Image 1 (cartoon, one colour):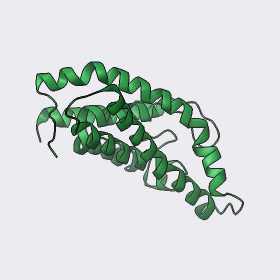
Image 2 (cartoon, helix red, strand yellow; image 1 turned 90 degrees about the vertical axis):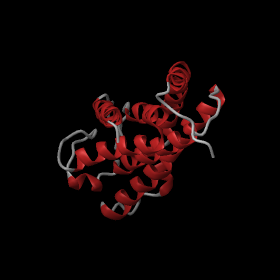
Image 3 (cartoon, one colour; image 1 turned 90 degrees about the horizontal axis):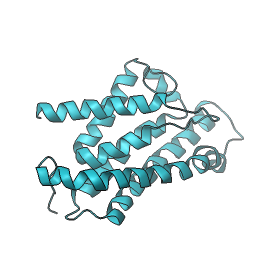
Length: 188
């Protein structure tokens, strides 16, 4: 791996960590800027390096450095919101996978990729939230519907706005990076 790639991976891991500190605590799941930076990692780094950036973020937090929204350390896996952090890795990977395969970048194609990544984050995060609260914390009254109402519905609107912002900025930057040779297209 090139030094430039390692630097970009570390940069996007750091940006995701910064996004964790830009938060508004609402119930169990805070509003953060993490998805914003995670989506950019997928668009600009591609599937593999985008995944590595989020894996690095997870690794640093799990070894005990408090870079997650509510701390850090190996026991953070028992936090109800940890599934969203795992979802960030899946999100960046999916966005990168779809973006790398776009022969021509259009707003709709890119928005679809970012939107798919956002949904992937929720597909991982919401069930994890449910399992931790229901099974680990022992809240027998907690249902999947409660998890969706508390861990999806309040956040989907702002995240859709983030999707449009990420796509709009990426439409300005991505074609230039491709033309300069920094990002290549993968042929299927």
